[in-house]
Image (cartoon, rainbow, N blue to C red):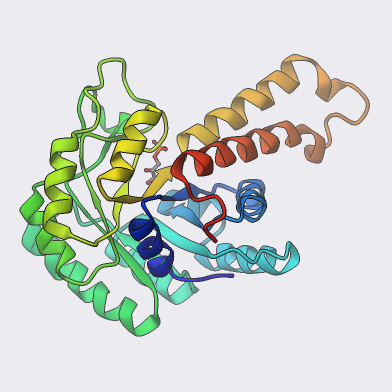
Amino acid sequence: MLVSAKEMLQKAKAGHYAVGQFNINNLEWTKCILLTAQECNSPVILGVSEGAGKYMCGYKTIVGMVNGMLEELNITVPVAIHLDHGSYEGCLKCIEAGFSSIMFDGSHYPIEENVAKTSELVKICAEKGMSLEAEVGAIGGEEDGVTGKGECADPNECKAIADLGVDMLAAGIGNIHGKYPENWAGLSFETLDAIQQLTGDMPLVLHGGSGIPEEMIKEAIDLGVAKINVNTECQLSFAAATREYIEAGKDLQGKGYDPRKLLAPGCEAIKATVKEKMELFGSINKA
Ligand code: 13P
């Protein structure tokens, strides 16, 4: 069932667990994540970055694909399609295309501009019954050349954005997208605690969920994180399983070159990763 992420995240925050956002890259990814969510009876958020949106032939194609799968696969758990790190223009496009949730990433703007643009989107999303995620304190990544520590958000700026009426808030707490470097300083629980004290019931979002040690994930959930984004770990498990298949020469045996066979081990690997995360986040049987 396609829904906004509002209710599932409010329930998660109150129930001290987190809902996973798993980024989709193609049909296989989407199918594997939906089937695993259904099997685990877990709510789920399908994340779509602007780049992945272009790759998958646009937001309308994605909405059509997801709606088709929900029906054909009999998916009854709550599912949100969510724009990940959207620009203002990207948000407007996804609203029009029929997404149920968007993230406006205004973290690179001065706080006044982030507030102004986020406020506009709060109004539109409320009218459409969609959920909105905002971001304070940029979350770095390898592509930005960040090593060591990700940025930490200013808790007062977090409160200013949370008070605008967004449904969830991503705040930098030392997290980074992609693989964590050897010298990563870890999550700043001090920052997270200060943010949650000021933002109360607001579901907080942890980006860069791949590769964070389990104890840190659990502590983050204890301190108010209700949504955790995972992309890289699914990509790594898909790539490793595909490599193993090809290195074993299986594509050369019989019809092993058939994409439905060639991609099958990678698909199973994604399913296992998603299930593992749902168990860790505590969202199993919370649909
Ligand atoms: P990872 O790729 O590090 O899991 O991060 C995903 C993410 O935060 C998407 O917004």
